[in-house]
Length: 364
Image (cartoon, rainbow, N blue to C red; front, side, top):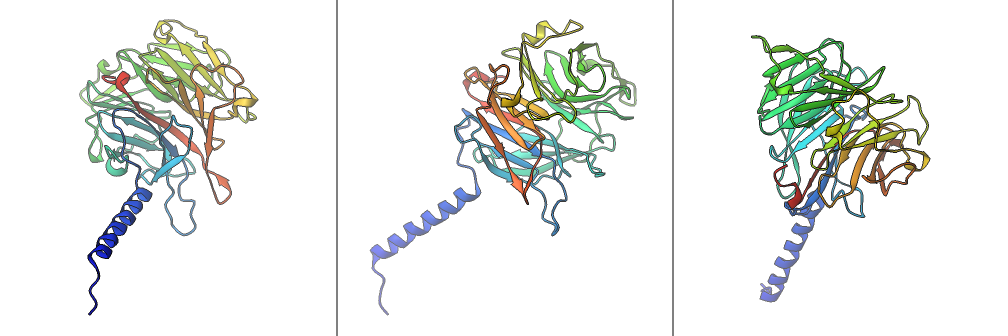
């Protein structure tokens, strides 16, 4: 039998290694510099759209989110029956997502996914199930108290539910259930000891819940959720998701006109927000809106918290995820836009969460 020369064996090994490495790169994100990067999680609301039982991808990732190439790099299927609000916290190393709750689909759970430190790959890891989680529209993790705050938007179970160390898989028993069926809320942001949510419906504005974590409850863990005050916003119609950069003290919130045309959606930006929370009515420092913005029905927003960054990201139910400058104002063109179609139908983003880190965000 002819012997294969040693040099050809060595070359064959090298080619095999190259091929294996290439396959891994196709299936994974490149290793991340965990000290400096920007990753945008986008939640999509489609569920059960396949005629052959293929599950809908309800989480997509834009990485890097601040680069000239603004595109989806990875997709994932979580347990949520149609993606709604989504939230990441680096201390937990978990991504949380609730269902959008639409089309008669019932899903009363919040789902947790682990995030690979260097690959960014997602894995289903937790489910916080509770029948009262029937319209979750806001999520926030308070790291000092190890509490996941879930905002149930409206109805008999409207309220704020506090979940301690939210890593269980099954029934979730909140440590506090703060309820008020007269409230209509959306989104969640936190600053100091205060929780902020959008007040939807008539006389739209921002609810301020001061010292929310210290709210008293009875033996059954149920307490009354009463806003400390409402910050009214003139001309606001459909306030939705919000983002609060507590270091720069800037809050952004989305607003849109019912059945409005492209360009009528708005991003309201409030600088020195902590100085405004004792007032009854507040006026945005600037507003991003107009035909050039492409905004139609913005439902969520995320501010890049890094000191050197000037980016703000918007999810619009017209099918777009857009990137503007936080310093933008008026009728400006977004510096990046991405959308995705399947079967000639634009997929609908319902929520955003940004994981952006560098040395300026240490300790946040």
